[in-house]
Amino acid sequence: MKRLSVLLAIIMLIASTSLVSAANWKDGTYEAWSDASDKSMDYAKVFIKDGKITGVILREYNNYLVEKDYASYPFQLYREALRTHAPKYVAAQGADVDLVTSATGSTTGWNQAVERALLKADPNYNPGKTYFDGTFMGRSETGDRNYYEVVWVTIKDDKIVDMKFQRVSMEPTELKIVELEDYPWPLLGPAREQYKENAIKAAPGEADLVTGATGSSKMWDNAVLDALDRARIR
Image (cartoon, rainbow, N blue to C red; front, side, top):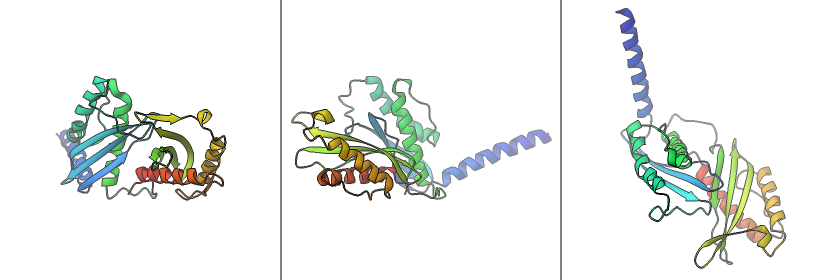
């Protein structure tokens, strides 16, 4: 009888802890992003009411930082995963839900984005830093020559530790990556490396412009700030 009482007390303690954890979520709407891969990045918007998850919106963006068009997306199992995955977070009242075998990368990213959104909703979460560790994509405005810059910014302990660049040309009918070997200015590659070096040395978002590449540097600045905004904890 004593062992049964102890067991019941443990079960009640676990249940109580779970309820307290849920109650710690502050009511509101919270947005967050997953780490970016070479091809995509995932997004989640989480709605909290009375300390509980009441709804989740999921999205996925490609390497041009353009939202995927689900209506015309050719992979039907992926569209099904998008349709059915969001309600799982409401049922689970958390981010730890099973991955979808046919969309492992996407559902892994969504789980991470929801987890980060819930950390934002937790008033007791105080990591002592501004940004989540990880790699985040950012996009600049479109320039006069009808292209924009995409950057992958890797952050560790509130410092930029790595960066990757992609120039996207807005062709009349489609977006196209501008390869270094196809670009008429041979100094674009060295300018990128110099900007990356400047960004790693500086505080996030405060890299010096590259002499002789002022226009590109300003676009990289905007893309980096966009990535940092996605990485921000509060």
